[in-house]
Length: 307
Length: 299
Image (cartoon, rainbow over all chains, first blue to last red; front, side, top):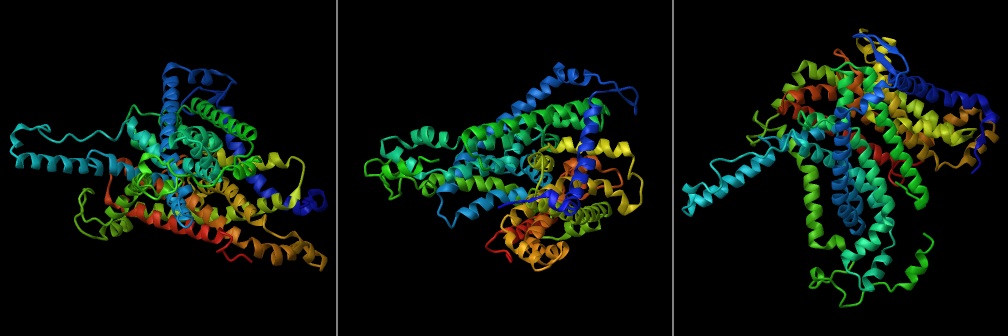
């Protein structure tokens, strides 16, 4: 398929490419460049910022307070990614080995929550996790039932289960943030894993089982190495948005469950320190591009990573 | 993987008896029928239940006749009526729809043109241009959000303008992250186009515009519709970027829900959320149906 050289029809080429280029340069590249320039600025008053080309904002990002936040963001995102991987791997294997007529339905079931607003999904989790939420409500019901049974068999007066039901603190802490990240970003992990497990030549597994390896050994030495591109893809696809997330820790996390996204948001809204916020945004962006470059590099070495 | 075929031939298909693990000993399952094992089914069932339970309870309790949101007290529509009569919520919804419609129209036109450029022409620096066009898809949302905040604060526009115009900042931001998605969808559609049709049309004397209108556009249409629905959903759903771009008088639906959620969990929010879920799921389902090659109106 030979594409037309742009020189043969310059007028059409310019007319068709100009709106998109214009929009992206003016309303995307220019704003980002502005943030980049601001990140070398100095705040001189409430509303005035001098561009002094200082690196102070970047140096400040490595102060203990912010280093701790960055470290915590990385740690929480890492935990969420690992949990996603542990949960998504069996799901993708199950979908891949399911009967053909079930596959699209199961895949659709994984993707469907994607279409639902992130905010609403997070909000739905609040209703589940809060002190008077459905999880604690269910637990309380079990507690009441257990107490009733104890009372019935004559042990009611000993208060074996404590004087009253203690609701589990499931919301407004790091646990809630990790649960929220896993809940929201799970499809990002399932899709690349599924694409790789599906592509996997199943006769390798048969050969491995045939040669005496157990299911666990087959999984460890055959399936996982062969689906490594999918694992790497999924890990990066979950880790990057998890690292930059702002909404989930904001709504589900407590006052100490702050991630880098929340710190950036605070600099631009409440704290009103745009230069510092800009520096943090660009650090986040560099990490993102680094991860994407790593993925591209690994995919080139691994030879073909579709998702 | 070039080694596939040789191994496939060398390995006997199917596994002999005696190799079964303890958990499949009493069934007639093949060794690779993982999906049919009960523990796998149980696992899948539990996972899907956990994935959907929060959303379903949210939708269910929007019909619950109780303020406390925990115990089912009976069916009611009153929170929908309440949400409808909540002026600021209604205005936010109108704002969101207005922005989504405007952004969809612009994104579809711009994205379609970009897709056609990339599909039709070769030009120096094309890979870099393609990477540039994909940039809004990969940049972290919060970075794009703050960039929009800084940009519109800097140019001092359109703050304080009358109603539809004050939404233009959000609309512009939405177009910036939507049209690359439209371009991807439309380009995927165009890759199935037979270029000879275009050449034939031009050979037969059709002008550039006539060829576009009568040959290319009809083929593009499913891709354009799918892209438009995608842009609509993206715009309607976006919270993070809108949150940074919106001002006190330009609150969109997700931003409004956010402030309500921060305040408390109420059935009214459930009702509003359910409405948004239904709208976006229908739009995306339509987009997928149109986009899929076997079901969509292909030619």
